[in-house]
Image 1 (cartoon, rainbow, N blue to C red):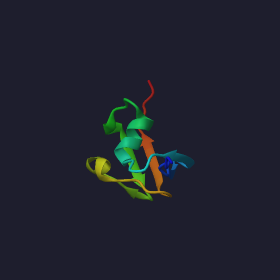
Image 2: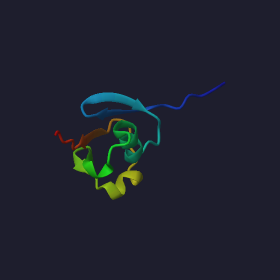
Image 3: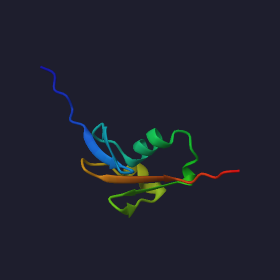
Length: 75
């Protein structure tokens, strides 16, 4: 019998998303921001700003609220 891993449900920028268990903030940002310049991205988890140097260490848990902001400029 095969056991499915439970997914983690997150609220990302106000929308619910299912992700794989063990996902880090860095993984989520890479999936959402693609090749965007990381210097132009800011993120918070549950209302707390997370410095870029900690993104890879922050494991997201079921129910976490994540805000990802990308600075864009127009010409």
